Every structure is written in C-alpha cells, then in structure tokens.
Amino acid sequence: MSWLLYALLSAVTAALVAIFGKIGLKDLDANAATAVRSVIMALFLLGVVAVQGKFSQMGEILGHKRALTFVALSGVAGALSWLFYFLALKYGRVSQVGPIDKFSVVIAVVLAYLFLGEKISLLNSLGVVLIAAGAILVALK
Image 1 (tube, rainbow, N blue to C red):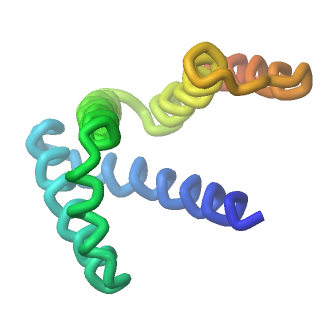
Image 2: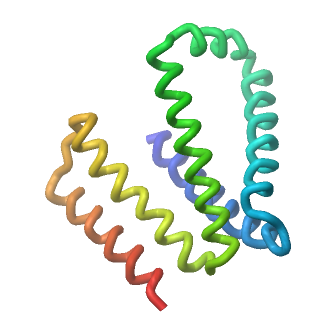
C-alpha cells in the first residue's frame, strides 16, 4: 500500500511544479528555466542518495549497460517532457496544461500493454477512457 502514498505525494508535488513553474516563468525563457530547474533537481537528488548512503549503487547502475541505456533514455524523455511542459505553461493556463499533461497516464497504460505485456481489465480500461475524456474536457475553453 506504500505505492499509493508515494503516488499521492507525487501528484501533490507535481501540482506544485505547475504552480511554482507558472509563477517562475513570468518574463523568463522556458528552456533556460527548465535547465536551471534540472540542475537543482540533480543536486537535490545527489543529496538524497548521499544521505541514504547509496552512492555505491551509482557505480552499479553505470556498470549495467542495458539498464544504463534505458535509464538514459528515460532521462532524455523526461528532459523533453519538462521542456515541452514548461513551454506549454509559459503560453497556456495551468488549468488547461495540467490535464493535457496528465494524458500521459493514458499513453503510459497503452504503451505498458503493448510493450510490457501488462494486463488491463475492463474496469481499468474504463478508467483510462475516463481519464482521456476528462483531460480533453478540462482543456477545452
């Protein structure tokens, strides 16, 4: 059940990213702001790893070529996601950008089904359809 607590904390902090980001982007270049944000994130996360005493696991990750490749691809995808997200926030309203950004949930479920073989029940499928419909409805003017 700890996954649910972490997921809820993720949702709350992601919402704060949108609010703080929108306020911070006023009169700034979105890409430069994203770069600064990324450096701060990297330093913060290195601090977390240090406090946890898990620096040795960094070498372990670097030693696994396949895992490192996918972690790197995930990093590039995340960077692109944040570049596009901050550009969208710069020019759009949080109340519209946020829900469309959460359409990633729908895409992730479909990709997990197609590439990871994850099963999707009828009830889960209905939820995914409702998320998609909700994102679209909230984003409409």
